[in-house]
Amino acid sequence: MVTAAHCLPDIKSDTVHVLPAYNKGAFREHLQAPGQSFRRLEDNDIAVLCDSSSTSPGLPFSGSGSKQGQSIVVTGYSVPKIHVQQSHTCTVSAVSGNGIGTLDCPLPPGTSGAPVLTAERGEVIGVVSASRQGMSVFTSIDAAIFNDLCN
Image (spheres, rainbow, N blue to C red):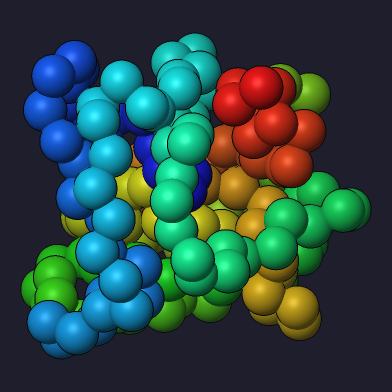
């Protein structure tokens, strides 16, 4: 599991509960993991759950990364319907050399940590970090970052 690091408080001894495919109170499974199972790249606002015992397949990572002009979909749990999975379609406005990208649409509060997916194949290219009037910010991520943090 990948999310924005700022979405997780600095938890050392608590248990984090993850509900894959959560929607309107229903979910595929209930995972519990110690807080220290998350590895963080604070400068890039990324947190990865390592040592997950999930039996659910995750979303695939994109092999091509993010590109300016690319159509994407962000699916998350934001206001005003925090228990309902919501999708937003946007376009990548820019991607910097350090992997920080901008989207041409504002996303509602609570979308931080949501995956940024390619519109055509539903592959992960990043994680939402912030939103403000007229735009949103995401951090690019790929399988190599995940593997580096967890191995």
